[in-house]
Image 1: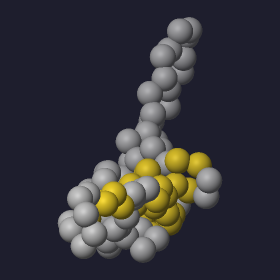
Image 2: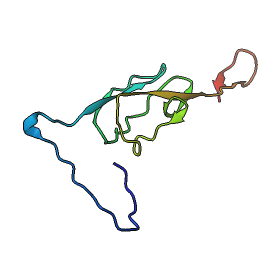
Image 3: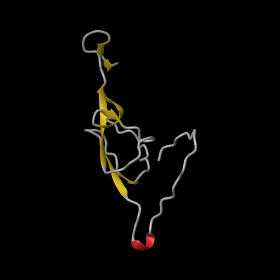
Length: 111
């Protein structure tokens, strides 16, 4: 869970699980949809924990901007997981200019 600064008297209560009754930690699946980029493996995450940041996917002609839940950027180090979720990669198309160098039929390069 996140952290909070305590600035006044606070009562904390312990929460117990009855392992003999079969209570176990819930785990949820974080799925990464790379939207045409390289595949990223799904993660199983215990309830209330954060997923870890995978390696950025790659997509030709694009720059990876991050993982999004709808239109909101998802901070993997701060957002705790409380249900199954699919995060979608957001990409920016890279501009490419072709610049001719020299006379006709000579080398071209991409800047």
